[in-house]
Amino acid sequence: MKIEVIKGDITKINADAIVNAANSSLLGGGGVDGAIHRAGGPQILEECRAIRNRQGKCKTGEAVVTTAGNLSAQYVIHTVGPVWNDNKEKSSKLLSDCYKNSLLVAENLGVKTIAFPNISTGIYRFPKELAGEIAVNELRKFQSDIIEKVIFVCFDEENEEIYKALLESPI
Image (cartoon, rainbow, N blue to C red; front, side):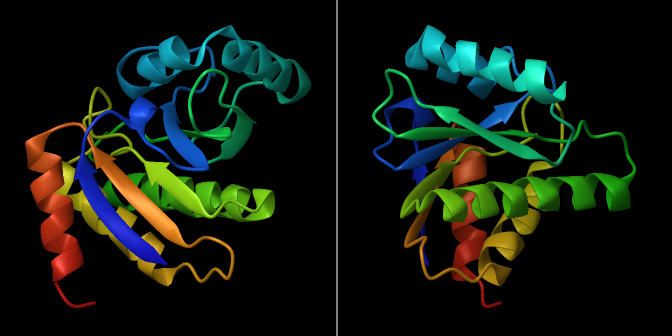
């Protein structure tokens, strides 16, 4: 898999699937979640409601999929990142699960390109450096014959620099 890092708006990325850093309600919110729901339109929210009616809330670390509505992607993979609470081991495992489960969903859908935001590093206050290490490690570990390209879409320069440095460093 080719891994790219760009600074930009994930709602404008050309990929088969984009990942939403959702909250457990799946009903939209602030940050990336709100931006994806606003740009994608009501169809995403309708499908999120249907998922909730079927299974209840989405647990931290899990991933579910909806249409991408008005976005250029085909799918939005919603994953719930952990809120940082100083329990490094537990929070790190949950964040790893977000990436792993999102990639598994993408693979099952036959997705060739997938774009990730910096999950949990905004309002959930996950330390950016640690979150970057986890994200890059999970991607490097994941073996796929289907997914060809992963794009980390960084909202700010700080995350962009962290991810670029991590990808330039040897494994």
